Amino acid sequence: MAEIKRIGFKVIGTVKEIKGSCSAGHSVGDQVELSMHKTGSLCGAFYHGIFPYVVMLQMGGSFPKEWGDQESIEMVCMDTYNAVKIELKRVKGE
Image (cartoon, rainbow, N blue to C red; front, top):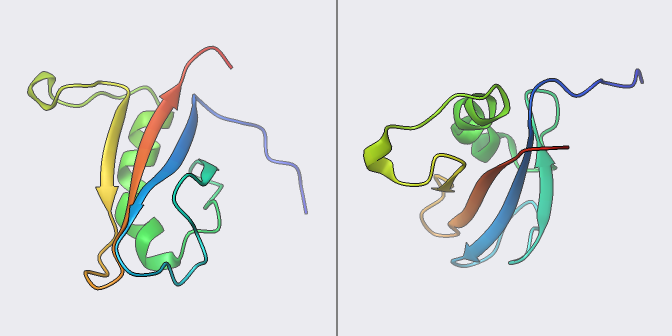
């Protein structure tokens, strides 16, 4: 497999909460690097839902100021019975 050069900023996903159990095996506190090329071993449904936000953070975009923090956002997977909450955070300077 070819080595992929990082484009833009590093984005770290941190699992903050799990209601039930994660079908992909993640636990609270897990951290994964995410990008348009790295799925962090998240299940496809969850990654599909957060992908636009990952790319926006990676490429230096911003949220409306009314949303608060411009460098991170918390998202919840679509499985309401086993909901995983993840914080996506842009890491500058790496």
